[in-house]
Amino acid sequence: MKRIAYSKSALRTLRHIPADQSRRIRSKIEQYAADPASLANNVRVLTGSSYLRLRVGDWRVIMDDQGVVLDVLKIGSRGSIYE
Image (tube, rainbow, N blue to C red; front, side, top):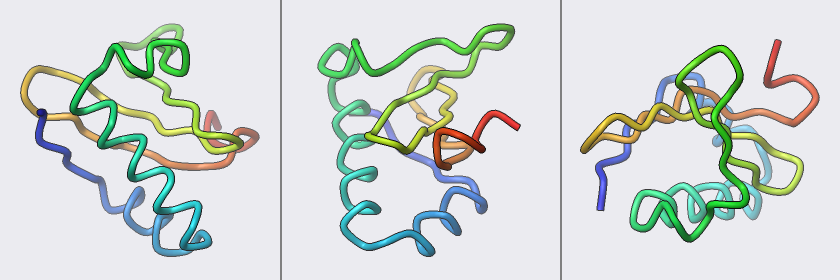
């Protein structure tokens, strides 16, 4: 399993959204860290960068997967995450 590192903005978002959604997002991130192939249809490489996008319902998680550490950079709703 990879080590997960959250950015300050990602942690702030997780604290401000409803608890059930926060738990669901964290569990999907942990599931991806344990087995990336299990969420293959919900993970895409962002166009023009090396970052990954994980889809969790109406929420999007922008991640950087480089080796042993999975960096969670941003978490946001699908309409505002790409700005």
